[in-house]
Image 1 (cartoon, helix red, strand yellow):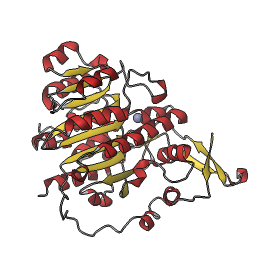
Image 2: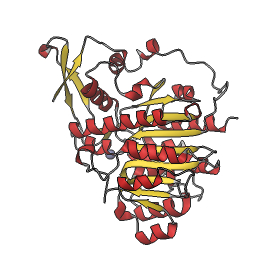
Image 3: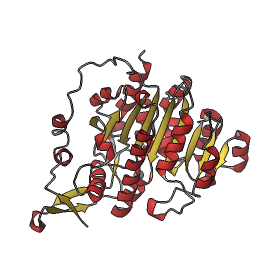
Image 4: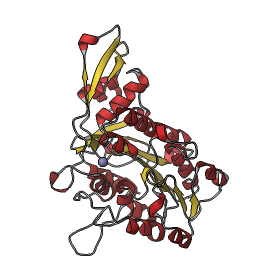
Length: 383
Ligand SMILES: [Zn+2]
């Protein structure tokens, strides 16, 4: 498959993709050497963590160039002021899965693939996840994904289990232990009707049911949105009854923003990974663009912008996607490029991390997925 980029508007971000970090210094102001936060509004009240599942650097590049042709503005996430790359390996340096990588971001430690923030040492003490930490601080919690709600990425923040396949335990933990104020995703079949009734959750089954919550003036005890029997369909296969990722994320943000103590919102672009496993470039582009639109939509919708820390990253790369340019086919100022998938599985390729908001400058020093947890804890532990 061929795409075209305009050489006439040779943007810095094009360099960024070629030389990874070298260009960034030319367009961004130098970061302060300080490691402590300072000044007014430097301590965020809210935090939104966006995770693109399987969203490697070249997945972003292909989606960006397919929409913008290499011209500014490119993907919205590239406009966030802090940028770095992080490694994603699981315990022992092996290729990760979503469970191990999300658990590393949730708790700051390494895990074997399949484990959900689970300490296998046997002392019975489990590490506190970010979601548990923020709940203990009195903040409201939100989990939004286009994958199954019991999928490994959100679940790693919510449970402590030795195996990501323990669906029933994940459901019970959401409904009766962690009890997020809002959670939405796919896979209604794992959520037993009796358990839902017992939990008292307000259940949303389609986009029309969003309307009932629009006038909501306070944070309700628990909202459970289940769309699609299994996963939420790919963007191009969805019907109008199913909310988009931006719609779900904005609803969650509006509801959580009523909490005067602040909130922690996790938003996963869950189907990017599925498209990459299938090596389906058309699905992949749709899913990455929807994820980017979600970030833009949530940041622009934020009425407490000076109080919210935004982080955008991925759990791992999937598919070993590469891009090569073909000078021989150059036509005018359009330059064709070819993409190639090398695997159907995850890889060890580092992923991007972008950040904005109070405290975000500290993410410049992030080098590994465990640093996501460590830096967030540093920011939210300072007074
Ligand atoms: Zn995967």
